[in-house]
Image (cartoon, rainbow, N blue to C red; front, side, top):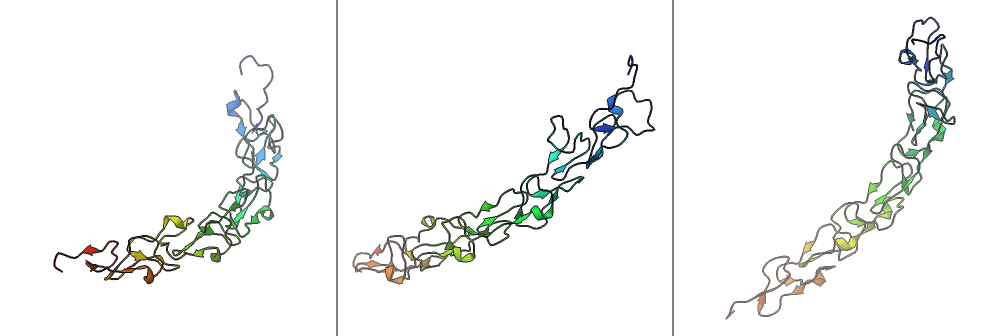
Length: 239
């Protein structure tokens, strides 16, 4: 630069090959290559970035412990970073997790039953209601139609309980059966996911029917010609 008697060292995060001459500004210094760090004022990278960290281009220090470190990152959760890595490596198996700063594949731990581990998680997550999670689950598995699960931490499919009589569990991943009460004019045996219509000649004015016995015979002076009737019809005069 004009007025500078001696050369100014290239800043941290950069280097200048030994044969390079005539630089006029810091912008002309070479950025440190990925996976390495450059303390500045040198003709080559100072060394590889530490395990548990990763360095994109332009790193000034091998880790984040030093206050003036730039362009060096702690290895993110769900990944591991070996010494000198240019990018974090995802844990190799779905359903595993690792804490930030992990440095080897062995730091990736299998998710235990009752929990699940999506890619990039630092801790195992509790399996939510309406689902179950076996060992190594990357995502919760929905309880099938006809069942429900109102507790977190389900480990196996048998955590999904057969829907009680009087309820219609016609969806997947149900956590609250109270939202699936059997409708008027119908009954719902245990484990059903379809309302069963009371047959012609009967009716049911309330919800929560459990069996055919909950369908009432049509009373005298009324008729119930259709299935699934909630209210019997009054017979016309003279009939």
